[in-house]
Length: 315
Image (cartoon, rainbow, N blue to C red; front, side, top):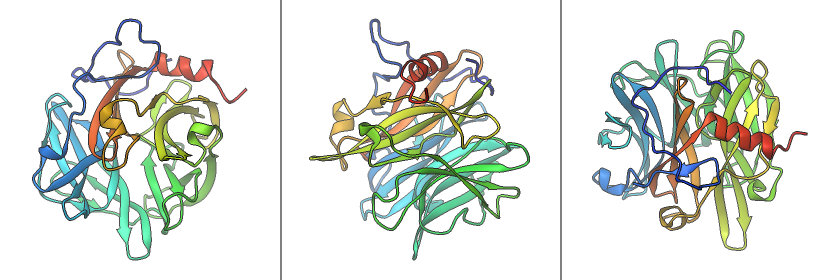
C-alpha cells in the first residue's frame, strides 16, 4: 500500500526491534517531551507536529500549574528534540495540524462558556494566526481535518458529545465548502469491541493511501479501575470517507510502559499526530502518555495495513 503525500527525508526513525510481533513499536528514548520542557507546565501532552521549512513545527497542549489549558508553538530540527515557546496562542486542548494549499490549519478543542467546540485557525509561519469561525456548535471534541479537499469540500472528523466526560462515543464527519459553514454530517463509526467500548475519537490527520485514508484513532475502555485509552486504526473510503472499508478489531498500541501507565491520568495512549514519508512508507506517531508527556512510536504503512486486514472487523 502506497502513501500519497510528501517525502520527509529527516523523519525520525528507529527500526522495529528484532522479533517484535506487533505493528507499532515505541521510541527507546520516550518520553520526548515532559513538563520540564517549559516553565510553569504541569504537563505537556496530546500535541500536533508537521514538517516545516528544513525541520518541524508543532502546537503543544500545556496544562499549566494553575491547571489552565493552553496551546503553545514549538520547533525542532529532528522532530525529537523540541524548543517550546512560552507564549500562549489559544486556550483549549488537544490540537491537530495539517497543511492545505500552502497554509497550516490548526484544529483544537476550544473552550467556550457553553461547552467545548472545535476551534479552527491558520498560519503560514507559526507566528501570526488567523482564527476562523468555530467548526461546530458546542459540544464536540476531537476535530480533525483531512489534508485536502475531497471533491470540492473540506472534511472534518468530530466526536459530538455533551458537557460530561464520556457521552457520546461516535465519530462523525462534517463538510464545508469554505471552512465557515459546516454541515452535511455523516456518521463514520461507533465503538464495537471491548477495548474501545466507551467511545472512539479521531487521532492524527488522516494519511492518504492509494485506495483510501488511513485513520488512527483512540478507543476507550471503562474498567473497574477507570479508563484505558488505546490506539486503533481503520481505512476510510477515498471519496466518501464516512464509509469504513476496513477496521482492526484490536488495538495497535495501549498503555504498557511506566510513562503510559502512571501520570495525571493513568493508562493513556492518545495519538494526535503522525508524520508519514511517501518514499519509504515509514510513519512516526506522536501520542500523549498518561496525560502527562509526549511520546513517539513507529510503524510502516505495510505493517499497519496488514494488521488491519488480518484482524478486519469489516468482513
